[in-house]
Length: 115
Length: 110
Image 1: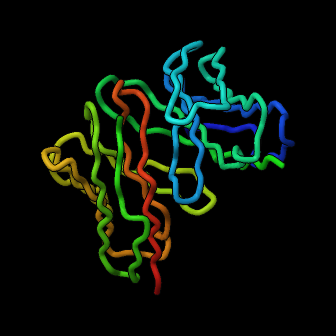
Image 2: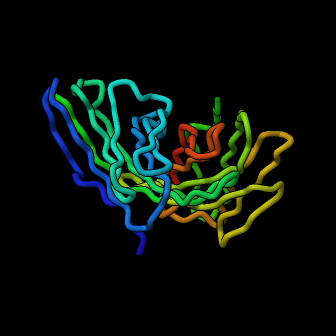
Image 3: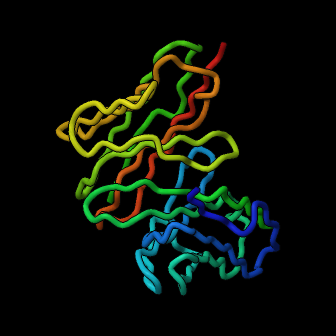
């Protein structure tokens, strides 16, 4: 059974803290993604990675960074958490097949609250 | 960039048929995907259309018209368990990342 695992289901952090969200996939996928989901706004892409040590900005990268040191692991970092980063964070992975879409597999999400 | 438009909410009764539309604007097109997300759950893949026409998978079908930049998800014989959010998605300009619409919340009542 394919799996994308996010390290925490719920997280509460204080404003200004550095926050790490971890994601691991066991499917040997090349691509990994971080989205945030807010009511009425759908899933918005923060960052993605198509290979180890490679990263690309998505639509809303401000205030975030990422790390991909190993193929199976993709970390999202909030350098200095702010209340407007309170959200549901979803990690996903997919196989890379150029010029066509492939199924993305999602983790269960991390609901982050910044107080 | 890529953008997608879909209705925010749809309501229907059990046993009915519902169609969720999606229009898109893209620089480079690699097909249209649909995902389902139950409340509190992760999005899961439903279907993918790369070519024009209708793809059928059980009670769900998905349609694509590339010339109209339009697609829809058709759900037949609705069941209460179909109450969920449905997202259409396209790949980004580089053909790597999935860009999602804002989602359509489907409420099925008895």
